[in-house]
Image (tube, rainbow, N blue to C red; front, side):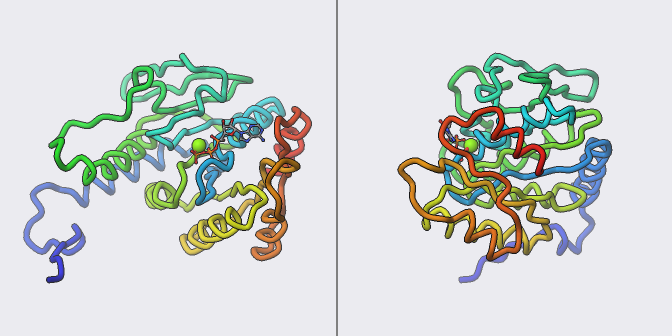
Length: 260
Ligand SMILES: Nc1ncnc2c1ncn2[C@@H]1O[C@H](COP(=O)(O)OP(=O)(O)OP(=O)(O)O)[C@@H](O)[C@H]1O
Ligand SMILES: [Mg+2]
């Protein structure tokens, strides 16, 4: 039997919850919070463990060192790693009136991460029926992203990097909340398996109106063989912005920052 689920667009009776107005108001709030942000760049891969967070942190620090004000929004709510990668495992958020202020961490990067709200090692919790927690978890995470975007006062930023979890779900939520689809920088390792997963993510981002900012090939020169970076770049007509070896030097990051 088909499910008869209506969206709020289809409500014909008077909508006493005011849901449509609430959503419009929140979108305006997000747009206001990001008004002084030059560009939002989502760091995405479609594949887990390829170094999205590592690349986001290295790039953020290099951008900041080059004099560009840079923020990092760690949108991986269940496996937040950005605070540790930015040498600030104990950074805490501050609240000022209706605004949440990002922590200023390594090299002056401004950071918001679930790490700053959760006690050490605790997963993101929620208030609701335990039995159906798998049903609600997705909505809880989408709501957390919405609140971060609506409440965080970044101030003026040249670049806000969004460190996404694997998959495309969080990217989609982000694209729906922002006034315009974010630019997307994809991270791959050299292997064909990574290339195929990243290709799907890139197509998904293109279909949602994102500009592809380039590919970063990570974990180059080690055990992984293949040429995913070059292949994806040729296929999508974009550049390989960097090839990151194991344990890169500051020069590698500086060159990447110049090209973002
Ligand atoms: N070029 C590199 N040199 C040394 N260590 C690296 C490099 N790239 C990634 N790592 C390490 O590999 C691990 C996985 O990287 P990372 O957490 O950035 O991947 P991810 O794509 O963000 O993973 P997830 O999909 O879980 O978010 C981390 O411990 C990270 O520090
Ligand atoms: Mg990560």
